[in-house]
Image 1: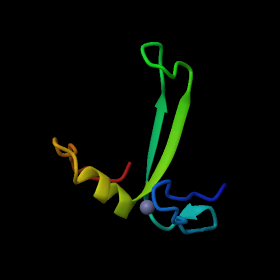
Image 2: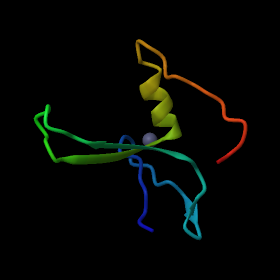
Image 3: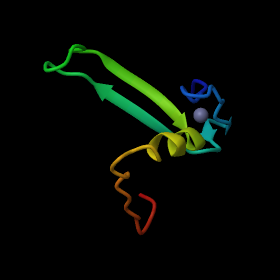
Length: 71
Ligand SMILES: [Zn+2]
């Protein structure tokens, strides 16, 4: 497993035995035909603090749902 770092602040997401000890946001986008990046695949990670900072600037808040159990 490769080391995961937050793309925004560079923080290393700690792991032990290939298990992440902090949860991390993974953004992945496969750009399509109606973009300037057709066939390009972008991936980035955000630590929880950077995720909070980014999403609190949203005009429309993040849709939040609560699961009853971990799947
Ligand atoms: Zn970060």
